[in-house]
Length: 269
Image (cartoon, rainbow, N blue to C red):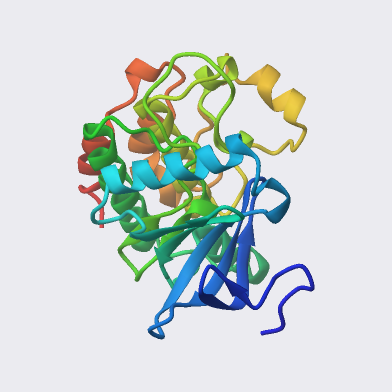
């Protein structure tokens, strides 16, 4: 794998062999530890390395990862830092993201097996239930941040927006997966459940839940947005329409908890 010109061959004692992804604050690198183990290295962008806010955000991510460590959450191995650099060494998860699974299924017009989609949703919700019990909201549940381990289990990654529940503040998350109440900012356990519901809807139908990509239009429509029916034109999905609608309820208090949502979906497949 050829490295981009702006990616060094070594970062904080780790040999870099590839790029796995990038966000506004950090880039995720495929790297090898001094003892030969491959890891995912989430490194603050060099131009932000001296920015206190960027460094504090990555340190907070490490704190929340440590707080919710366990099944269904990517494992934090080490925090690596010097005066010029900061990175998180994370367990390398080799399975594709649900975003990639969706892209490939859409490209091939090939349905994702219903039992598999439901199993991945249950695995996501169980991981979220554990996090919520620990007082942490992920706040950015979307197919890019859910990696598959096999045909039934997933692991949540990218805790850059994670934190305690809040009712207002800056908008956190990916706009296509925001819950209606998130138009006012903040995030809650119910917001995570809603995002998981959107993700499941998309896995079952292979369509995008929200068809417009205009951020302003999406935010304006959020507060009064009603759930989209799962089974319109798809009678085969009718058995799952009720549970999915519950996850997508407009009012946060009308949604099941992550734990209850996982149990609700356990009646299928």
